[in-house]
Length: 543
Ligand code: GLU
Image (tube, rainbow, N blue to C red; front, side, top):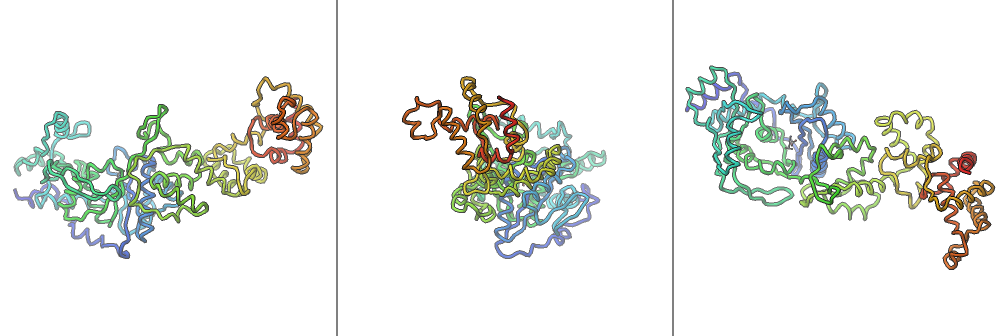
């Protein structure tokens, strides 16, 4: 077979040579040891939690080594393309402070010299390399029609495979030049497959950046490189793009691990050196029954990074939580450096956990409470307003008009040595503090206590003083004593039957009347913020 002739027959219009292409992608001038990483999502319309995981690793490897982190949009599967999807990804990356050094905005700017950063704009490059492989006898055309997105042979192979018959080589590799010429004349579309030399019974070894040495069976399949729409498969594009764009570390999901042998063969056929790889584990969670299951796009809204935005999670908390999930040292570091910025954490992307990460909202919420508790009331107000502007428009006007009051509400039990840890996302604010924005609609009072509760409230109208916390409490105590409640806790414990309860009980009744709840932040602070008139109004509405 005259391979050169075959290459010209298949790609008569491809004049661009790989030498010309490679000139446009010179080796990057970086200091020794600098790593180049990339995030390479498919534009499916959302930013995956697992993808964000990879971004954290990509970003820190690049930054810690003074390297480069770039964004490449893998849009070759046009059935899955969602318009505007890359904007979603850029929004999240920049929103979290992980802006890539190089990227392209569709119809907008391109930053970086190694683009285009959209794969569909690199079509001519893939075709040139495909032509080269055909001309070297390393690849061949396959004319099998597609059925349900899979070539006939592919379906047959899958059936065979299921029956344990491993028939790997593609029948089209044996077509004669005449048959191929005939097919082309008939206008038949073709895909390009690699002519695999692999032996599917032999193993190859490679070193995964986080998992260490892995042994895996060689590729022996004549896999598709270029689909019959002339666009590359992930495998082919990965080898070409990551080589030309100078990627030194590929961080990707563990679902790509089984394709590693094919990638090794493609890199070899192209004469390229493979980058380092880090395969990240899939994220799981416990279901209601306590069993582990993979996070699913359909069932788990948190798979989409925008969920955290909509809910108003603090971004630092989300990042810290994820760092926690992938690197067990983070928790210890955080304990020893309670006030440091997470960016100071000496994160080693090569030392990520190999233990299955389990997503746990309780843990995320705890971290978030912690992070938010350290913010000033002013900062909280800004975050809350910002969140509302995007996700709770109906509250914006109120928030803007009542800036001072809302900031005071946010300051209840805050800006203290031991601030209260209750808010973990901004969407919970109005519900958590509903009693600061209107009288409660329900009250957590046990029916058996109603008589005592009402008696306390009726009396309290005459004892309400909000001048100082001390006066306020002294008055509550005075009333409590007069109504038969203990004002001294030790005494109450010794003779519980002598009293109706202790002063804490009285405070609880007042708290329920004012906030509807048995538990709330500092009652005096709440009452002073509401003001005497409002407090009285609430009590009078009950008794
Ligand atoms: N587009 C691939 C994906 O979304 C990229 C994998 C990789 O990073 O190489 O899974």
